[in-house]
Image 1 (cartoon, helix red, strand yellow):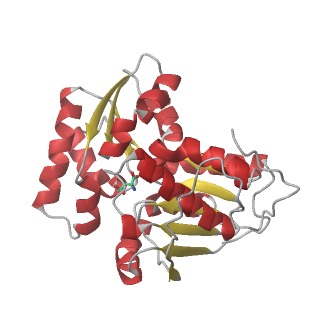
Image 2 (spheres, protein in one colour; image 1 turned 90 degrees about the vertical axis):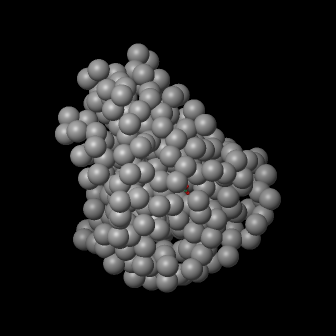
Length: 294
Ligand code: DGL
């Protein structure tokens, strides 16, 4: 793993940095907040550039490096990529770049932990994936699932409009139901027993998915799978916050603050509190550059 944290150079009192293209990653933050209540978290939602799911890999790498640079400048002790599209396109570049900018800061991400869980849970090896077009096209889940369950077959469904309609579609109406039903059809036809929700927005339609796929199909989400991994890394590298009780969580967003608070509260299922608007400079960050992150 790149960037092994060194407990002697990094304070465990610093926050965990988490980012996503917008509010979807708040479903991951939700799991982190309930699993690791004593930690402080700093979440960045790149709402001005949402959605990421139909963007090119080079663009997603550039955005992810810009965000990582901002979170490092704000003292993140660990970087959590709570966006499947960003993970699929940019995790390698992020690890490479952080090794130059801040080798003591590790990067954890979705995709791998979910694939490991899916491999452990599937009795038949028939696994389904619902994800954005960028994530499906990257082949990241084929590789990650194949590493843990070489005999498994992955039925992939690219869902171009699902994240935007979940984000804009409250209260859910029949259009949302029919869109979700359409994406489930190939999974039902393939008789999958496990479905990876390969986008951090999708847990919001989990009840619909359960009805449509049937009670025997297991859903695997990004947040649950990742929270255990974050805890393990913090403990292993002596980075767990020493306090008991509850830590603090704060938000940065690149788009409209009011919209972030309104929609974000539903995704987090907790009050959002302080949200700061930031403009991310559109640096052309080159992977491998040693220029200081701060
Ligand atoms: N949150 C993003 C992900 O997990 C999906 C939404 C988007 O398209 O930006 O891939």
